[in-house]
Figure 1 (cartoon, helix red, strand yellow):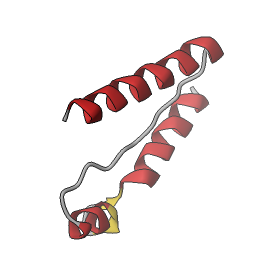
Figure 2: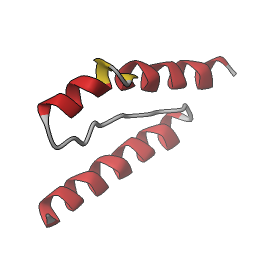
Figure 3: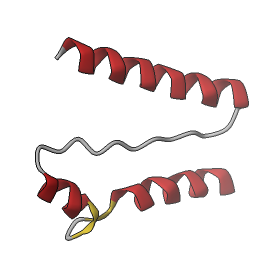
Length: 64
């Protein structure tokens, strides 16, 4: 929907601006799923924990 697109654009731009102003890497992860089962599979289920993956990526960037 248009509302979804506006929210996604606003969040992505806001996160980018934080990174630029702080001169630090910033990341965010959003699970876009159609079912509860898909969400569970990506939040510690058979596809791992995508939130943890996102956090580890930021820690690796900060360590450089």
